Length: 169
Image: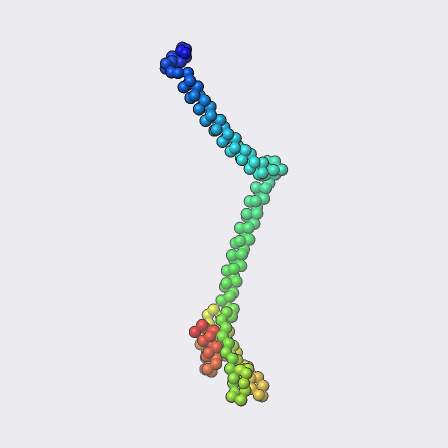
């Protein structure tokens, strides 16, 4: 079969069956591409409907503005929290953080280790030692000031142990 159009395209001597097969293959490829596009469109449409469910353009704009306001509020709160944390850390330098406790028997005739030395130090190793001596006559408590890990008054053996324990030695 020969026609002026086939001659013009240069396929006049070609068998028509080959031409139909080529057109059929192209048709199948187009159908496959169409199905792929329909699936993608369906997924996109579902996402869009979920996003726009019950909303118009104005309410969506209000939601976006509300999100920006929430974000601004969260940033302000975050900055406030950072300042508060810095202030807490600054104050903690002067709080007692290190503790040393030594229990002992002050007198040979007394048992049960009722006497004790308690050392409380801040971050700069300043604080005090509380020495409580328990005897048969009563209980007596003494304090000694500690500055930078040193005492101006000489320390007893138990007090030195409590100080070393608090300083981490």
